Length: 140
Image 1 (cartoon, rainbow, N blue to C red):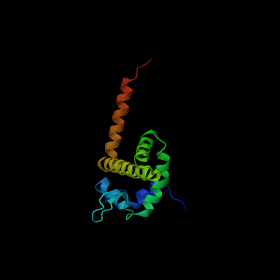
Image 2 (cartoon, one colour):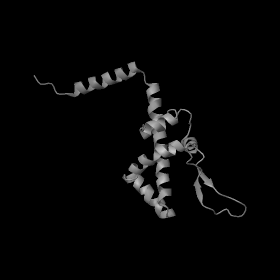
Image 3 (cartoon, rainbow, N blue to C red):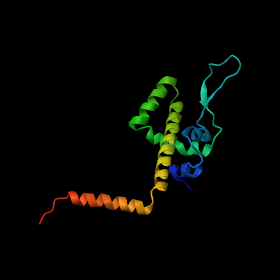
Image 4 (cartoon, helix red, strand yellow):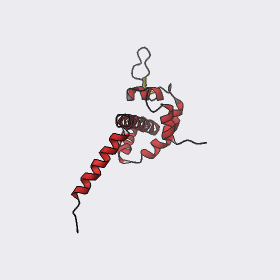
């Protein structure tokens, strides 16, 4: 049975509860950058660590592929591809950025849900509806 990629990411991270920063999340997923240094060879290529959760990287593949056709991600992909000459490195950069955006929006959404009570939400919605009704012209 196939799972929806976003649902799988949210499940793998327990709704991002354990991660205080996007850096922790990218490290957990294995998207953190590793510099390969040995003795005097400091100028070696960087790569992702892949020590993290491989299922998250697996589930990020298709959403990032689709997102890379949008304006924002296409610019990132083209910039990385032009800089490195490696198309897959650009695709991984899109995956990482998309994961960070999911973390940011998930943290914001769930924290807003926790701070707003049902009664408070209903009162705010009712006040908005009342103000909208007051602005309508009355016809008799």
